[in-house]
Image 1 (cartoon, rainbow, N blue to C red):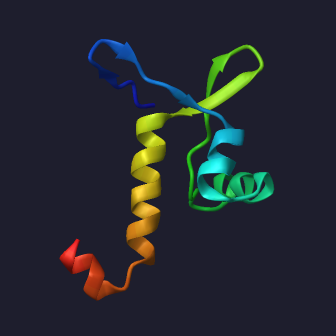
Image 2 (cartoon, rainbow, N blue to C red):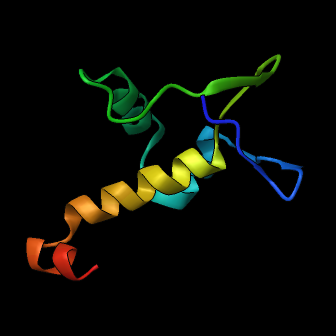
Length: 79
């Protein structure tokens, strides 16, 4: 799991609800992506009892990769 520290500030955790808001994906789609073989999204880590989440840097990289996959190949070369 990623443990990034920026300016000595602990990295923020991204919840399923926040990921839904950022991506427009449904909860069932997010869980299906985690269950895919190979997984299209890693499982979140435990943040505290009753709370799980992804590191914000992981989600940022994951989203950028998904956006890059959607660009036509001519745009990927220019990016």
